[in-house]
Length: 322
Image (cartoon, rainbow, N blue to C red; front, side, top):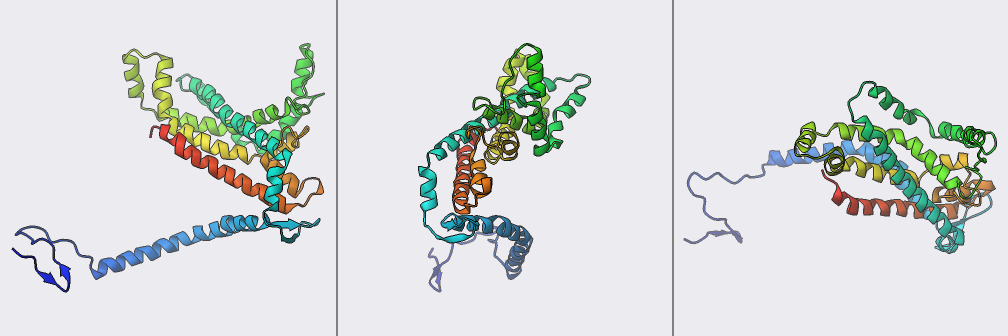
């Protein structure tokens, strides 16, 4: 049997009796699809406009500003090409700042997860009065960064701070938590972990509470103890939440500013100066108005956040049990 050819097109195989006709895109269907696309664009327009005004335009301005010099009043003084980037990467202080940023970021992220798990795991036991403790442990969420940092600055003061007063009463020597290069960065890390602990606890409580108890009971019937059950069943089941905490915690740590400004001001001797605080110092600190160099540092920070996020989604997400 030959296949009929019409208008240069080869027809498909012959249709047998009783077989359904192939679907055809009617004029009504095409019109409906075009209408759906228009409706989708209309619904997306406000969000796209907001992104264009508050994200894409500022990012473009920063990219342009990073290639310009600035006068003493912070006004653009002509294009300097990539000199701001060359100056950034050749400055010996930039390496120390990046190292401080890395230590701060790792300390905050790991501390959030470790302390969050240490707090949440005991709260998974059904005992009377635990809802009260859960509410108290999420209380840091309602405390602003500035208020919490001021409170900790008073507690950690070297002479009359509450913590040093207790240490002195116990016969010890006062510890310069905020005025020593050995303690300043660690103190800021602890305060930052405290400030984010409430949100972490809230997320982990929801994750552990969503675990099917039949799975836990089946593990106990198979002879698994509490530690084995926690390590082999509970923790793998909450890995999506842990992954979320790692990603958001990394971004939050890389952009932390308030605690550093209030507690240490980046000191002493730049021991607690992170990349964000270096941007502030170049743009506004001590009467500086070097917005070109600050913009170059901002681009570096943007690329750092973007790169770490891509690595986390490319590496860590493969170990997440969805």
